[in-house]
Image (cartoon, rainbow, N blue to C red; front, side, top):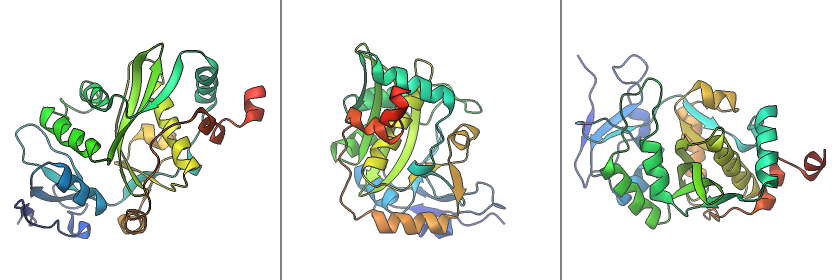
Length: 251
């Protein structure tokens, strides 16, 4: 007999994330289906360690996998090649990090990025509209890599208090998404954020220092940080010092 899946009406609260399907079920981590995808439900979901993901023709599906992939900013793995790229980016005129200057453009670029093992994208116009409203409410953000006035890479994420949830990245030039992720890591280090949610385990994220933790620990982190003062979503070039201390630049 298939496991019970919660069907949510618009007024229903989310079930506890601990009730998500387990490793022996058809879709591990799946918690519920239904609800509207709008700013209100997104805020409620992320505040409880839940995120949406669904395919074409499906209802809104809500997930909370166990274990949870996370990146601790202090454990970000700065490989030698990326270090050289960041040093060059920081020193070169016309290269800059912007925050929240082109949020919907970043989402559209993420939607148009082909990914191994994925047929199409879940970031359809309705999803972009919902996250754009979430952005307008101050909870969704983009970290953008700009070169000579062109957006060449970036990511979008969610911030609830001091809880930060990574969503998707794109790159139109080599390492442009990694530069944006490194900038997010620096911003988080600067403001005392101890964990960035990465949702699912991927080899790419693991290579940059992300690792899995038990969902219970992740939910505890969200409960502790969601009501803290929100981050200042801006990037000052001095933030690079968190990864590129002055002595490294001089070397």
